[in-house]
Length: 513
Image 1 (cartoon, rainbow, N blue to C red):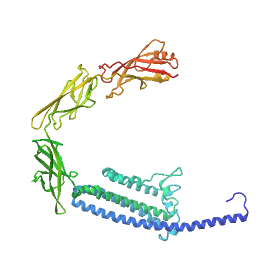
Image 2 (image 1 turned 180 degrees about the vertical axis):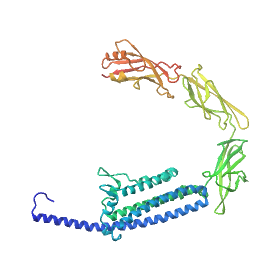
Image 3 (image 1 turned 30 degrees about the vertical axis):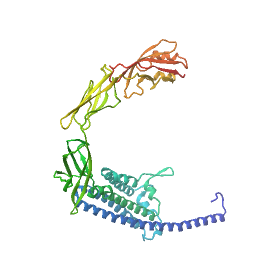
Image 4 (image 1 turned 90 degrees about the vertical axis):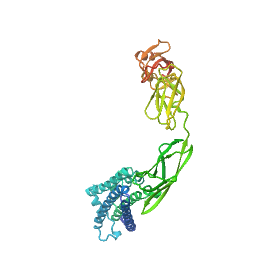
């Protein structure tokens, strides 16, 4: 409307315009109110359907507990708790809805439910959330945290699918850059029918979440795991290969190992197996000739008072007796002085293996060794290996490795080597170091001293890894663009200072100021 002094006629026109807008808003509001009421009825029907489905799922779970208590008792306990939490929160919300409906004469006359006072007085006081509102938020939080704790503790796969924390979050909402409390954003100032519809939607979300969780507990992967029809017979040998003349040793299990399974009869390769222990069939028979050998048979079990069976079908390989060892250096076929060289030494199919060589020692774990040739003057070293086969026969082998010194280190300044450009003040505080570029071992070198040369000035011997006062004074007399040199760097291996490294390459610094 225009501002400033207005005539009585203009004021009347403006007032009539406002009344006209209000009448239009009132008519639209009634249509919207009715739409909210119809939506609320539909959501109530959906919630009732979810509740019936959840009761059926709980009944099915109770039946499973009777059939297989060892598998389902703990699941039933968690499902009961989730069902209890869902029912408590839904009933609490229903109580709030009932209390709100008492503020109107006819809860079905949606066009009269246009006021927000009933909800505002319940959840808010003096612009703040009331104790009743805090209670409402705390009940949602209890449900959210309790259900999430059950899922995250025992059912991570379901927790990743059903995000309870996100679905029932009550954090502040971002409205045009401002933070608004969730309760105010969702309920304050809304028509009563809209608030009741929001509460019904929350009930539907609760029942839907419960339904998804219970369904996941009873179907999908879990249902597949506990149904014997979906198990696969798996042959597990004691070792991956067997020598000619040995007995095959291993076991047959069904799918995920289940020590509650009881078999009626087991036949493998045409013979009945009597050695049945805790859901396993223990196998012990001649391995056969060299090559692939088949294992076939049947597992018979009782399910729903009828005899059913699962076919056994698998294979294993029989390999000839070995006549040589497999020896490999983890860092090439070279060993270095001054370091612990890791070695892997084994004979395929033989667990009792011994290895001998100067500086060689076991490092824990089957086949793991460390070799220290620091004091060895020869340019080669030979490793001898022997092992005893299952039949008592001994096999042996040997392999020669080259012995090399650690390569020549290079000097560094501020981690850079070769020719470096640097400001004078940066050089004064920089660390002088040494490293081994492109070396297979990650070694740390300690610098204990070096020589510092400025053109036209005497060479200064520095102790430590930084310029001392004399070196800094000489540096200040150097001209811009001149190159100073750090050479004869004294470096040693960290943890092995007795090893004499090759001469360290110098580093040249061009002064930029």
